[in-house]
Image (cartoon, rainbow, N blue to C red; front, side, top):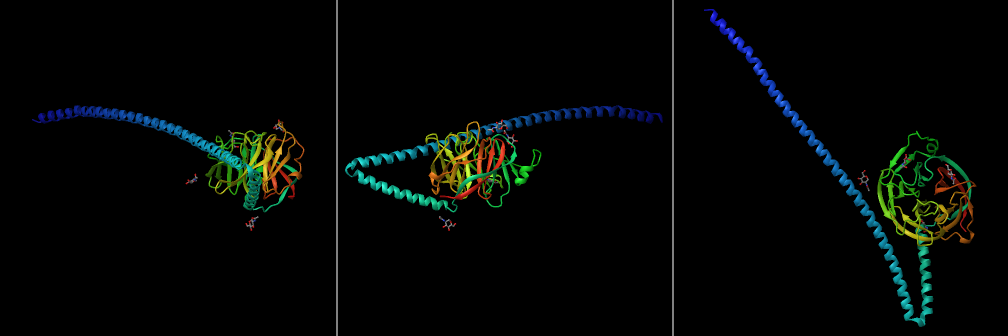
Length: 398
Ligand SMILES: *[C@@H]1O[C@H](CO)[C@@H](O)[C@H](O)[C@H]1NC(C)=O
Ligand SMILES: *[C@@H]1O[C@H](CO)[C@@H](O)[C@H](O)[C@H]1NC(C)=O
Ligand SMILES: *[C@@H]1O[C@H](CO)[C@@H](O)[C@H](O)[C@H]1NC(C)=O
Ligand SMILES: *[C@@H]1O[C@H](CO)[C@@H](O)[C@H](O)[C@H]1NC(C)=O
Protein backbone atom coordinates (compact mmCIF):
# COMPACT_ATOMS: atom_id res chain seq x y z
CA UNK A 1 0.00 0.00 0.00
CA UNK A 2 2.89 2.24 0.73
CA UNK A 3 4.28 1.69 -2.80
CA UNK A 4 1.47 3.54 -4.55
CA UNK A 5 2.05 6.90 -2.99
CA UNK A 6 5.77 6.46 -3.57
CA UNK A 7 5.24 5.87 -7.28
CA UNK A 8 2.87 8.80 -7.40
CA UNK A 9 5.40 10.90 -5.68
CA UNK A 10 8.16 9.81 -8.05
CA UNK A 11 5.89 10.39 -11.05
CA UNK A 12 4.97 13.85 -10.00
CA UNK A 13 8.63 14.48 -9.26
CA UNK A 14 9.65 13.45 -12.79
CA UNK A 15 6.93 15.42 -14.41
CA UNK A 16 8.00 18.46 -12.47
CA UNK A 17 11.60 17.93 -13.58
CA UNK A 18 10.56 17.49 -17.21
CA UNK A 19 8.16 20.48 -17.12
CA UNK A 20 10.80 22.93 -15.87
CA UNK A 21 12.99 22.89 -19.02
CA UNK A 22 9.90 23.28 -21.11
CA UNK A 23 9.03 26.54 -19.36
CA UNK A 24 12.61 27.70 -19.52
CA UNK A 25 12.74 26.99 -23.22
CA UNK A 26 9.51 28.90 -23.82
CA UNK A 27 10.81 31.85 -21.80
CA UNK A 28 14.07 31.88 -23.71
CA UNK A 29 12.21 31.95 -26.99
CA UNK A 30 10.09 34.82 -25.77
CA UNK A 31 13.13 36.75 -24.54
CA UNK A 32 14.88 36.08 -27.82
CA UNK A 33 11.83 37.28 -29.73
CA UNK A 34 11.56 40.46 -27.63
CA UNK A 35 15.30 41.02 -28.05
CA UNK A 36 14.95 40.79 -31.80
CA UNK A 37 12.01 43.16 -31.81
CA UNK A 38 13.87 45.67 -29.67
CA UNK A 39 16.91 45.35 -31.90
CA UNK A 40 14.86 45.98 -35.00
CA UNK A 41 13.12 48.94 -33.34
CA UNK A 42 16.53 50.29 -32.34
CA UNK A 43 17.78 49.89 -35.88
CA UNK A 44 14.80 51.71 -37.22
CA UNK A 45 15.18 54.47 -34.65
CA UNK A 46 18.83 54.84 -35.59
CA UNK A 47 17.97 55.12 -39.25
CA UNK A 48 15.27 57.62 -38.39
CA UNK A 49 17.81 59.69 -36.40
CA UNK A 50 20.26 59.57 -39.26
CA UNK A 51 17.57 60.68 -41.71
CA UNK A 52 16.61 63.58 -39.44
CA UNK A 53 20.26 64.61 -39.07
CA UNK A 54 20.64 64.55 -42.85
CA UNK A 55 17.49 66.63 -43.29
CA UNK A 56 18.72 69.12 -40.70
CA UNK A 57 22.11 69.35 -42.45
CA UNK A 58 20.47 69.80 -45.84
CA UNK A 59 18.11 72.42 -44.50
CA UNK A 60 20.97 74.24 -42.80
CA UNK A 61 23.02 74.31 -45.99
CA UNK A 62 19.99 75.48 -47.92
CA UNK A 63 19.26 78.29 -45.46
CA UNK A 64 22.94 79.29 -45.45
CA UNK A 65 22.87 79.50 -49.24
CA UNK A 66 19.68 81.55 -49.12
CA UNK A 67 21.17 83.90 -46.50
CA UNK A 68 24.30 84.54 -48.53
CA UNK A 69 22.21 85.12 -51.65
CA UNK A 70 19.97 87.55 -49.79
CA UNK A 71 23.04 89.36 -48.50
CA UNK A 72 24.44 89.60 -52.02
CA UNK A 73 21.11 90.98 -53.20
CA UNK A 74 21.12 93.56 -50.40
CA UNK A 75 24.56 94.78 -51.44
CA UNK A 76 23.46 94.92 -55.08
CA UNK A 77 20.35 96.90 -54.17
CA UNK A 78 22.39 99.35 -52.11
CA UNK A 79 24.92 99.79 -54.90
CA UNK A 80 22.19 100.29 -57.45
CA UNK A 81 20.55 102.89 -55.24
CA UNK A 82 23.90 104.60 -54.86
CA UNK A 83 24.38 104.71 -58.62
CA UNK A 84 20.84 106.05 -59.08
CA UNK A 85 21.43 108.80 -56.51
CA UNK A 86 24.64 109.72 -58.25
CA UNK A 87 22.94 109.83 -61.62
CA UNK A 88 20.00 111.86 -60.28
CA UNK A 89 22.35 114.42 -58.77
CA UNK A 90 24.13 114.75 -62.10
CA UNK A 91 20.88 115.07 -64.03
CA UNK A 92 19.74 117.77 -61.63
CA UNK A 93 22.99 119.65 -62.18
CA UNK A 94 22.66 119.28 -65.96
CA UNK A 95 19.03 120.44 -65.79
CA UNK A 96 20.08 123.51 -63.82
CA UNK A 97 22.75 124.29 -66.40
CA UNK A 98 20.23 123.93 -69.24
CA UNK A 99 17.73 126.16 -67.40
CA UNK A 100 20.39 128.75 -66.89
CA UNK A 101 21.47 128.73 -70.55
CA UNK A 102 17.86 128.96 -71.69
CA UNK A 103 17.08 131.89 -69.43
CA UNK A 104 20.30 133.54 -70.54
CA UNK A 105 19.36 133.02 -74.20
CA UNK A 106 15.83 134.40 -73.73
CA UNK A 107 17.13 137.62 -72.30
CA UNK A 108 20.27 137.96 -74.36
CA UNK A 109 20.07 141.78 -74.11
CA UNK A 110 20.46 141.82 -70.37
CA UNK A 111 22.77 138.86 -70.38
CA UNK A 112 25.77 140.70 -68.96
CA UNK A 113 23.81 142.24 -66.12
CA UNK A 114 22.24 138.92 -65.19
CA UNK A 115 25.65 137.34 -65.32
CA UNK A 116 27.01 139.84 -62.85
CA UNK A 117 24.00 139.52 -60.58
CA UNK A 118 24.30 135.78 -60.66
CA UNK A 119 28.00 135.95 -59.99
CA UNK A 120 27.50 138.22 -57.04
CA UNK A 121 24.76 136.06 -55.64
CA UNK A 122 26.94 133.00 -56.18
CA UNK A 123 29.78 134.66 -54.29
CA UNK A 124 27.53 135.57 -51.38
CA UNK A 125 26.19 132.03 -51.29
CA UNK A 126 29.72 130.64 -51.39
CA UNK A 127 30.81 132.84 -48.51
CA UNK A 128 27.73 131.89 -46.55
CA UNK A 129 28.28 128.17 -47.03
CA UNK A 130 31.97 128.52 -46.10
CA UNK A 131 31.02 130.38 -42.94
CA UNK A 132 28.49 127.67 -42.09
CA UNK A 133 31.08 124.97 -42.61
CA UNK A 134 33.52 126.79 -40.35
CA UNK A 135 30.93 127.04 -37.61
CA UNK A 136 30.06 123.42 -38.17
CA UNK A 137 33.68 122.38 -37.79
CA UNK A 138 34.10 124.82 -34.91
CA UNK A 139 37.55 125.85 -35.89
CA UNK A 140 39.12 125.60 -32.49
CA UNK A 141 42.59 124.55 -33.62
CA UNK A 142 44.70 126.66 -35.88
CA UNK A 143 48.06 125.00 -36.14
CA UNK A 144 49.65 123.08 -38.99
CA UNK A 145 52.48 120.66 -39.57
CA UNK A 146 55.87 122.35 -39.86
CA UNK A 147 58.29 119.43 -39.98
CA UNK A 148 58.90 115.79 -39.08
CA UNK A 149 61.12 115.67 -36.01
CA UNK A 150 61.82 112.01 -35.30
CA UNK A 151 61.04 108.42 -36.11
CA UNK A 152 60.60 105.56 -33.66
CA UNK A 153 60.23 101.96 -34.84
CA UNK A 154 57.91 100.48 -32.24
CA UNK A 155 57.69 96.93 -33.53
CA UNK A 156 58.03 94.73 -36.59
CA UNK A 157 55.04 92.41 -36.83
CA UNK A 158 52.35 91.28 -39.20
CA UNK A 159 52.03 91.55 -42.96
CA UNK A 160 53.73 94.05 -45.29
CA UNK A 161 50.50 96.07 -45.25
CA UNK A 162 48.29 96.70 -42.28
CA UNK A 163 47.10 99.20 -39.75
CA UNK A 164 47.67 99.83 -36.06
CA UNK A 165 45.49 102.18 -34.11
CA UNK A 166 44.98 103.91 -30.82
CA UNK A 167 41.76 105.68 -29.91
CA UNK A 168 42.52 109.44 -29.76
CA UNK A 169 39.58 109.92 -27.38
CA UNK A 170 40.09 110.43 -23.65
CA UNK A 171 41.53 107.65 -21.45
CA UNK A 172 41.93 105.06 -24.16
CA UNK A 173 45.23 103.20 -23.78
CA UNK A 174 44.65 100.11 -25.89
CA UNK A 175 46.43 99.38 -29.12
CA UNK A 176 44.59 97.67 -31.96
CA UNK A 177 46.46 95.69 -34.56
CA UNK A 178 44.86 94.94 -37.93
CA UNK A 179 47.37 93.04 -40.03
CA UNK A 180 46.80 92.61 -43.75
CA UNK A 181 44.34 94.15 -46.18
CA UNK A 182 41.54 91.63 -45.62
CA UNK A 183 40.76 89.83 -42.36
CA UNK A 184 38.21 89.64 -39.54
CA UNK A 185 40.56 89.30 -36.58
CA UNK A 186 41.67 92.36 -34.63
CA UNK A 187 44.33 91.94 -31.94
CA UNK A 188 43.94 94.11 -28.86
CA UNK A 189 46.84 94.99 -26.53
CA UNK A 190 46.31 96.55 -23.10
CA UNK A 191 48.70 99.44 -23.82
CA UNK A 192 51.74 100.49 -25.88
CA UNK A 193 54.21 98.75 -23.57
CA UNK A 194 52.39 95.42 -23.79
CA UNK A 195 52.23 95.87 -27.57
CA UNK A 196 55.97 96.53 -27.83
CA UNK A 197 56.99 93.70 -25.53
CA UNK A 198 54.56 91.02 -26.59
CA UNK A 199 55.96 88.19 -28.67
CA UNK A 200 53.91 85.76 -30.67
CA UNK A 201 53.06 83.60 -27.65
CA UNK A 202 51.91 86.43 -25.39
CA UNK A 203 48.19 86.31 -24.74
CA UNK A 204 46.32 89.08 -26.49
CA UNK A 205 42.63 89.65 -26.81
CA UNK A 206 41.21 88.71 -30.18
CA UNK A 207 38.19 90.52 -31.53
CA UNK A 208 36.29 88.90 -34.35
CA UNK A 209 34.45 91.30 -36.61
CA UNK A 210 31.11 90.37 -38.18
CA UNK A 211 32.52 91.14 -41.65
CA UNK A 212 36.10 91.27 -42.91
CA UNK A 213 37.70 94.63 -43.65
CA UNK A 214 38.96 96.00 -46.97
CA UNK A 215 42.31 97.78 -47.19
CA UNK A 216 44.09 99.58 -44.37
CA UNK A 217 41.96 102.70 -43.90
CA UNK A 218 40.31 101.87 -40.56
CA UNK A 219 39.81 104.30 -37.70
CA UNK A 220 39.07 104.04 -33.99
CA UNK A 221 37.10 106.84 -32.41
CA UNK A 222 35.47 107.00 -28.97
CA UNK A 223 35.30 103.23 -28.52
CA UNK A 224 34.10 102.40 -32.02
CA UNK A 225 35.98 100.84 -34.90
CA UNK A 226 35.04 102.24 -38.30
CA UNK A 227 36.03 100.29 -41.40
CA UNK A 228 35.28 99.62 -45.06
CA UNK A 229 33.50 96.28 -45.40
CA UNK A 230 35.24 93.82 -47.70
CA UNK A 231 33.16 92.83 -50.74
CA UNK A 232 31.14 96.04 -50.70
CA UNK A 233 31.74 99.07 -52.88
CA UNK A 234 31.23 101.73 -50.25
CA UNK A 235 29.79 100.30 -47.04
CA UNK A 236 31.27 101.65 -43.82
CA UNK A 237 30.77 99.61 -40.65
CA UNK A 238 30.62 101.05 -37.14
CA UNK A 239 31.61 98.40 -34.62
CA UNK A 240 31.23 98.78 -30.86
CA UNK A 241 34.49 97.40 -29.43
CA UNK A 242 33.19 97.01 -25.87
CA UNK A 243 29.92 95.31 -26.77
CA UNK A 244 31.55 93.57 -29.68
CA UNK A 245 28.86 94.12 -32.22
CA UNK A 246 27.96 96.24 -35.20
CA UNK A 247 25.91 99.24 -34.19
CA UNK A 248 25.52 101.06 -37.48
CA UNK A 249 26.53 101.21 -41.13
CA UNK A 250 26.36 103.68 -44.00
CA UNK A 251 27.04 103.94 -47.70
CA UNK A 252 29.52 106.59 -48.77
CA UNK A 253 28.18 107.99 -52.04
CA UNK A 254 30.49 108.70 -54.95
CA UNK A 255 32.95 105.93 -54.15
CA UNK A 256 33.91 103.60 -56.96
CA UNK A 257 36.54 100.88 -57.35
CA UNK A 258 39.35 103.43 -57.64
CA UNK A 259 41.91 103.18 -54.84
CA UNK A 260 42.28 106.30 -52.70
CA UNK A 261 46.06 106.29 -53.17
CA UNK A 262 47.66 104.94 -56.33
CA UNK A 263 50.47 103.25 -54.38
CA UNK A 264 48.03 101.44 -52.07
CA UNK A 265 45.62 99.65 -54.39
CA UNK A 266 43.71 97.76 -51.69
CA UNK A 267 42.54 100.86 -49.80
CA UNK A 268 39.49 102.34 -51.52
CA UNK A 269 38.30 104.39 -48.53
CA UNK A 270 40.71 105.75 -45.94
CA UNK A 271 39.25 106.96 -42.64
CA UNK A 272 40.88 109.61 -40.51
CA UNK A 273 40.28 111.23 -37.13
CA UNK A 274 41.45 114.66 -36.03
CA UNK A 275 40.44 117.40 -33.57
CA UNK A 276 37.27 117.98 -35.57
CA UNK A 277 36.08 114.39 -35.82
CA UNK A 278 35.79 111.62 -38.36
CA UNK A 279 36.68 111.95 -42.05
CA UNK A 280 36.73 109.71 -45.12
CA UNK A 281 39.29 110.15 -47.90
CA UNK A 282 38.72 108.61 -51.32
CA UNK A 283 38.90 109.37 -55.02
CA UNK A 284 36.68 108.92 -58.05
CA UNK A 285 37.80 107.83 -61.48
CA UNK A 286 36.06 110.79 -63.14
CA UNK A 287 37.55 113.69 -61.19
CA UNK A 288 41.06 113.60 -62.64
CA UNK A 289 42.44 111.44 -59.87
CA UNK A 290 42.12 114.12 -57.18
CA UNK A 291 41.28 113.18 -53.61
CA UNK A 292 37.84 113.86 -52.14
CA UNK A 293 37.30 114.27 -48.40
CA UNK A 294 34.04 113.83 -46.57
CA UNK A 295 33.22 114.81 -43.02
CA UNK A 296 31.14 112.13 -41.34
CA UNK A 297 29.03 112.44 -38.21
CA UNK A 298 30.12 109.35 -36.26
CA UNK A 299 27.00 109.38 -34.08
CA UNK A 300 24.44 109.22 -36.86
CA UNK A 301 26.73 107.86 -39.61
CA UNK A 302 25.70 110.58 -42.04
CA UNK A 303 27.66 112.86 -44.35
CA UNK A 304 28.13 116.44 -43.11
CA UNK A 305 30.05 117.92 -46.04
CA UNK A 306 32.27 116.95 -48.98
CA UNK A 307 35.29 118.75 -50.47
CA UNK A 308 37.01 118.16 -53.82
CA UNK A 309 40.66 118.72 -52.96
CA UNK A 310 43.60 119.75 -55.12
CA UNK A 311 45.68 116.74 -54.01
CA UNK A 312 46.48 114.04 -56.56
CA UNK A 313 46.09 110.33 -55.96
CA UNK A 314 48.95 109.58 -58.35
CA UNK A 315 52.06 108.45 -56.41
CA UNK A 316 50.23 108.99 -53.12
CA UNK A 317 50.71 106.25 -50.51
CA UNK A 318 48.81 107.51 -47.45
CA UNK A 319 47.25 110.60 -45.91
CA UNK A 320 45.96 111.94 -42.62
CA UNK A 321 43.86 114.82 -41.29
CA UNK A 322 45.06 117.36 -38.74
CA UNK A 323 43.07 120.35 -37.61
CA UNK A 324 40.73 120.14 -40.59
CA UNK A 325 43.55 119.89 -43.14
CA UNK A 326 44.48 116.95 -45.33
CA UNK A 327 48.18 116.00 -45.56
CA UNK A 328 49.08 113.59 -48.36
CA UNK A 329 52.27 111.55 -48.34
CA UNK A 330 53.86 110.69 -51.70
CA UNK A 331 56.48 108.09 -52.56
CA UNK A 332 57.92 106.15 -55.51
CA UNK A 333 56.18 103.02 -56.77
CA UNK A 334 59.03 100.79 -55.55
CA UNK A 335 59.44 102.58 -52.23
CA UNK A 336 61.73 105.46 -51.37
CA UNK A 337 61.73 108.48 -49.09
CA UNK A 338 58.24 109.66 -48.30
CA UNK A 339 57.31 113.32 -48.35
CA UNK A 340 54.18 115.39 -47.84
CA UNK A 341 53.72 117.35 -51.03
CA UNK A 342 50.10 118.36 -50.82
CA UNK A 343 48.07 119.98 -48.06
CA UNK A 344 44.41 120.88 -48.43
CA UNK A 345 42.80 122.89 -45.68
CA UNK A 346 39.01 122.63 -45.45
CA UNK A 347 39.03 125.73 -43.23
CA UNK A 348 41.11 127.63 -45.82
CA UNK A 349 43.41 128.99 -43.16
CA UNK A 350 46.59 127.59 -44.69
CA UNK A 351 47.95 129.74 -47.48
CA UNK A 352 48.19 127.33 -50.44
CA UNK A 353 51.22 129.25 -51.77
CA UNK A 354 53.18 128.79 -48.58
CA UNK A 355 52.81 125.06 -48.20
CA UNK A 356 56.13 123.63 -46.97
CA UNK A 357 57.61 120.48 -48.44
CA UNK A 358 57.81 118.03 -45.57
CA UNK A 359 60.22 115.11 -45.76
CA UNK A 360 60.05 112.02 -43.61
CA UNK A 361 63.41 110.83 -42.21
CA UNK A 362 65.63 109.62 -45.03
CA UNK A 363 65.24 105.88 -45.32
CA UNK A 364 63.63 103.34 -47.59
CA UNK A 365 59.90 103.46 -46.76
CA UNK A 366 56.59 102.23 -48.06
CA UNK A 367 53.67 103.32 -45.91
CA UNK A 368 50.33 101.56 -45.99
CA UNK A 369 48.67 103.89 -43.49
CA UNK A 370 49.25 107.07 -41.48
CA UNK A 371 47.11 108.31 -38.63
CA UNK A 372 47.35 111.50 -36.67
CA UNK A 373 46.69 111.14 -32.96
CA UNK A 374 45.60 114.54 -31.65
CA UNK A 375 45.89 113.56 -27.98
CA UNK A 376 49.49 112.36 -28.24
CA UNK A 377 50.48 114.75 -31.03
CA UNK A 378 52.17 112.09 -33.08
CA UNK A 379 51.67 110.07 -36.26
CA UNK A 380 51.06 106.33 -36.18
CA UNK A 381 52.22 104.65 -39.39
CA UNK A 382 52.68 101.18 -40.86
CA UNK A 383 55.88 101.06 -42.90
CA UNK A 384 56.52 97.85 -44.85
CA UNK A 385 55.66 95.52 -41.93
CA UNK A 386 56.95 97.84 -39.18
CA UNK A 387 54.82 99.87 -36.80
CA UNK A 388 56.37 103.31 -36.47
CA UNK A 389 55.67 106.62 -34.72
CA UNK A 390 56.64 110.01 -36.14
CA UNK A 391 56.94 113.07 -33.94
CA UNK A 392 56.57 116.43 -35.61
CA UNK A 393 56.74 120.19 -35.22
CA UNK A 394 53.75 122.47 -35.64
CA UNK A 395 53.27 126.18 -36.24
CA UNK A 396 50.34 128.60 -36.48
CA UNK A 397 48.41 128.45 -39.74
CA UNK A 398 49.27 131.43 -41.92
C1 LIG B 1 32.82 126.40 -30.81
O1 LIG B 1 32.08 125.81 -29.75
C2 LIG B 1 32.10 126.52 -28.53
C3 LIG B 1 31.32 125.72 -27.52
O2 LIG B 1 31.42 124.39 -27.74
C4 LIG B 1 31.49 127.90 -28.72
O3 LIG B 1 31.57 128.63 -27.52
C5 LIG B 1 32.27 128.62 -29.82
O4 LIG B 1 31.66 129.85 -30.08
C6 LIG B 1 32.29 127.80 -31.11
N1 LIG B 1 33.13 128.45 -32.11
C7 LIG B 1 32.72 128.66 -33.38
C8 LIG B 1 33.72 129.28 -34.31
O5 LIG B 1 31.61 128.35 -33.75
C1 LIG C 1 44.02 87.12 -39.84
O1 LIG C 1 44.66 87.73 -38.74
C2 LIG C 1 45.10 86.83 -37.74
C3 LIG C 1 45.64 87.66 -36.60
O2 LIG C 1 46.51 88.66 -37.02
C4 LIG C 1 46.14 85.89 -38.34
O3 LIG C 1 46.54 84.97 -37.37
C5 LIG C 1 45.54 85.18 -39.53
O4 LIG C 1 46.52 84.40 -40.17
C6 LIG C 1 44.97 86.18 -40.53
N1 LIG C 1 44.27 85.47 -41.60
C7 LIG C 1 44.54 85.68 -42.89
C8 LIG C 1 43.73 84.91 -43.85
O5 LIG C 1 45.38 86.51 -43.25
C1 LIG D 1 24.15 93.77 -30.24
O1 LIG D 1 24.14 92.63 -29.40
C2 LIG D 1 22.97 92.49 -28.64
C3 LIG D 1 23.10 91.28 -27.77
O2 LIG D 1 24.41 90.83 -27.66
C4 LIG D 1 21.76 92.36 -29.54
O3 LIG D 1 20.58 92.29 -28.75
C5 LIG D 1 21.68 93.56 -30.44
O4 LIG D 1 20.62 93.39 -31.36
C6 LIG D 1 22.98 93.70 -31.20
N1 LIG D 1 22.89 94.91 -32.01
C7 LIG D 1 23.11 94.90 -33.31
C8 LIG D 1 22.94 96.18 -34.01
O5 LIG D 1 23.44 93.89 -33.91
C1 LIG E 1 60.09 95.72 -47.48
O1 LIG E 1 60.61 94.68 -46.70
C2 LIG E 1 61.10 93.58 -47.47
C3 LIG E 1 61.59 92.53 -46.51
O2 LIG E 1 60.87 92.53 -45.32
C4 LIG E 1 62.20 94.03 -48.41
O3 LIG E 1 62.59 92.95 -49.23
C5 LIG E 1 61.70 95.18 -49.27
O4 LIG E 1 62.76 95.70 -50.04
C6 LIG E 1 61.14 96.28 -48.40
N1 LIG E 1 60.57 97.31 -49.26
C7 LIG E 1 60.80 98.61 -49.06
C8 LIG E 1 60.15 99.53 -49.99
O5 LIG E 1 61.50 99.01 -48.16
